[in-house]
Image (cartoon, rainbow, N blue to C red):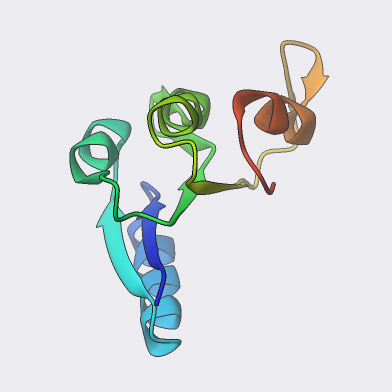
Length: 102
């Protein structure tokens, strides 16, 4: 089964997503920050599921890291944010940074 790295600084969301995906028999790894996610990232990760806003950190840094270092990894960006990034709609900006799905 696929290995999914979930990154979110909201503990209840992180736990809920993890439980749901484990119930579906996915191998799940959790991180609450970009630093922790980078430490847990390796070649065995198939999917990165990350929040856009991670406390004072931005999800684009993690998306760019994953896209450049692990190009085969599928990247899913999730966010409750609706604002633009550098005057570009958030979804389009996520795609430009390397996200596969927003």
